[in-house]
Length: 82
Image 1 (cartoon, one colour):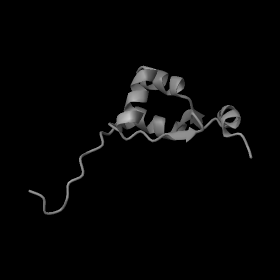
Image 2: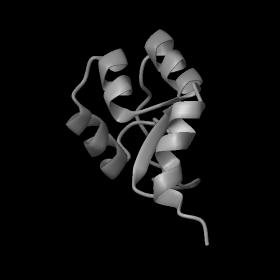
Image 3: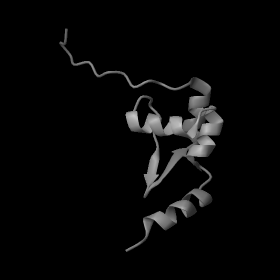
């Protein structure tokens, strides 16, 4: 059975399209803890990849966020709701 945890760091190192939370925090000028809160609450639409206990973000997504800003997740409105 392969060890996912040990391979996660290698995946990130070999794949320049994946960014770590500290890299994303620096790019977006926020604290790493802020990213953790956003992941936990789902407040913003900022997709991430989890490999074992490691979290990564796609570089292209972060570049789009830098250009267009973060989008808040809206409340889902049911059709016909008053």
